Length: 308
Length: 226
Image (tube, rainbow over all chains, first blue to last red; front, side, top):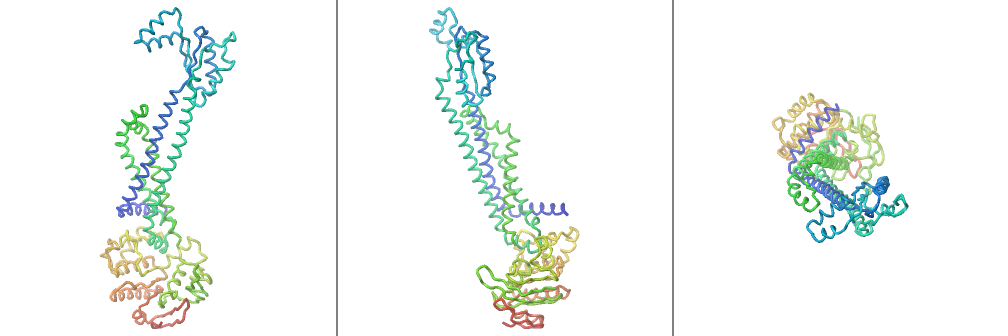
């Protein structure tokens, strides 16, 4: 009997969706708007996260050592830094490499190159580029570099300077901006998603309100709750499926068009490429949201008229 | 078969719909309930269908107190009663065939039974040719005949018709009453509420007269009297 009922409920659901074409179209359109909002929030969050990640990646501190510093002492410090949980990566640049890079940077500036040639020794010290796991942790790393654990084997400091102190304000501001953007983005996304779900829910409630008399008649001919509720939930699921599949198609030209803009403005993230690469995830989120909103809204709305 | 035991119904706004009504209906009876609007006829039927609960007293179907049934038992109980309403209450997006089949599906009947019984009952109300029409494509009389077919198809013990001819012209009214009489002749109990004097007088069956929530007359072979 279960399969017979399931077959009858599904068939009735499909027929109701088809026969109430105008109502179905209106509901699907509202649902598409809801899913577009969810999709746009998804993409905005990807753009924001990528931009923030790339900004974070640009933040680092460079420790410049005195030219006479012993390489093994520098390696010891590098090793100590790598042992810190706050540190994501430490890159070593020898004084020779630093000089080569400096020369390459100023290859068009003859006066600087001449001045450099005048010097008998390499005036540039070796460097360690340190990337923290989170930008807020640079202060801790800077503190570590001031401590006694970065002294040479002879007990003197070999650090010439740490550029954190020059960039401290900028780094702190950036950290605050990143944290605020994350919080604000989450809050706005949540508010928009809730708002659009409420709109979709109320639309479905209205369509079921039109059937309230019929629901009470079904009750009076002895139909069970599941048998009455079932076809409405099936219709809700169909609304969700049709709307989410349409939304996925709509996003193809939209992301293709926006993709070029985002590539230029958001540090290389092409939204179209992102959409194609993450399609299974976006598909699951949109289809899942559509089906859940459709089914759950219908389920709740019918329940209201079943109290006969 | 049906027994109202000192039943009263007072709505939350303190209006008294029924007051201490005691009434018994035997199997195979054809009972007409008459009375002015607000006399309590529809409340009586709603209590019988367990659509409303009494403020006081009990309603029995055979030996069962219908208001002591749980939800699933109420569904089973309602399948023993076929309802016909003044405003037909057909499901608008189902065809005539589907409206009738729905009642059988709700009762858990098999596809084979549905395919066999629906055409039969449509034939009984002379609507075989309209099986695939939607309610909006039917006349008032045809809609009411579909409603009767729907009420009949599960072979209920009782047919309850709440002013079934209220929206119909005299010709359709006559047809509907003839169908109800035929159903009663086959052994189904019929409870009919109506304002139509002609129907009551032509039936020559039991008539219960209600006024302000009370039964004021109960005649075995009554005439219309208010």
